[in-house]
Amino acid sequence: MGTDDSASPVFSIKHLSERIKTGELSPTELVESTLDRMKKLNPILNAFITIIEEDEVYRQAQIAEKEISLGKYRGPLHGIPFSIKDIIYVNGIVCTAGSKILADYVPKSTATVVQRVKGAGGILVGTNNLNEFASGITGINPFYGTSKNPWDNSRLSGGSSGGSAVGVSTGMALFSIGTDTGGSVRVPAALCGAVGLKPTFGRISMNNIFPLAPTLDHVGFITRSVWDAAAVMEYVAGRDASDRSSIYTNLPPYTRIMEGPCSKGLRVAVLKEYFCDNLHFEIADLFYRFVEFLHSINIKVIDSLTLQNTKKYYSSWKNIRLAEAANVHLKWLDSRADDYSPEVKEMLMQGKEISAVDYIQSLKAVSEIKSEILAIMSNQRIDALVVPSTIVAAPRISDSVVNVGNNVVVETRRALLQNTIVFNSTGLPAISIPIGLTKENMPVGVQIIGPPFREEIILSIAEMSEKLYPPMKDFERRRLNLLNL
Image 1 (cartoon, rainbow, N blue to C red):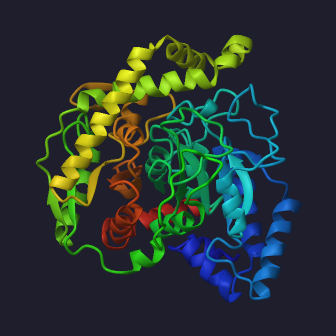
Image 2: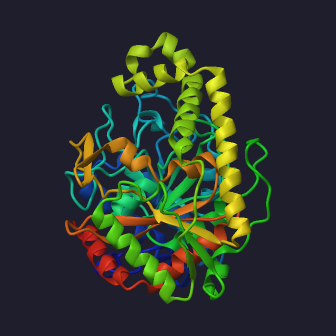
């Protein structure tokens, strides 16, 4: 792939797949460019734990190339290099889960989501760095090193799918499959200037993926554009008999739906209560400018809603998250406790102390929270909710707390999790898209949330924003610099 491709403002699945389909670009050329970028950037940014052997990657590319030349084109993922969070199983490839305990674990099975991407012709190039056992939101890993934000190497990538966001943002992969239990796809996407989609709970199979907290775990993915996210959805979503939590529903043609006009008659609610608490002034400025843009394209914006259960958001999520994680790790807590990092060990021990009563009460609180949100959306005829993805831009790696302004200091982990956790608890679909940069040129994201199994709504609003929101032209120009680090 020539330099013109890597500098293209549409360095995306959509752009490159069209060129592959016509024969203008071969999968082998694309793979060669991707591998070169990985060799150059991964030693600096630490986005990958395992990089697939070159011979195997080229073999996959040559197969795709031959199929396409014979007229057997499978669709937009055919010949496209992708990566996966190193918590997702692939037969024969080490899956560390970012841990010491599984440092040498080689699965004998492959996750359904990977099978589906490979069935669509995708080419796996590596597994991405993450927080240990996905137990974090920062991208800091004591065993495999910290994945670094490509906009500023001294700052956090976010996590736990931090390596995925770094890889996609810099073109080391065209998309990455991750998991999201409290914001682990959307937060790193926001901090690294990418698109992060967490579909509805049960929309994508969790089969053969190491769990963190099963009732909160979602498969999601990070892409460079909204269209790319929709295209991946069309191939990976849907019922899987091997995963009892996956739900059968008809899958709409996401990419075709986005091609039509969608703003007429749309009603979007801006949630200020809780979600704008402790909002850094630069984030607030960029967020409200985006809200004004929604007004300008004839979307009805409602911003006077009152929420009753916000005090339960964090405590209910935390109790479920810690208790379920402790249950997953009980055996190793007894036999290999010293092989955890102190931070993860402490979280797991806290989880063991959560009583059955507190766990059940938290599940009840989550049910009430979800019912309240869905009732508001139904009664007010609201199509989607809009909130900042995070209340701060990417903190420095060394910062355990962040100053959000007015002498208010918030723990970094809590600040990054604040606006995403409730949509794991409730299972609602959510997408984070970039909306601009701070004065220090760090990306800021907005989160768009929809009703259950209505991903087409949030994808349509997100793509329309990506295309029409004026600051995105400057953002894309600056993001292209990451492709030439």
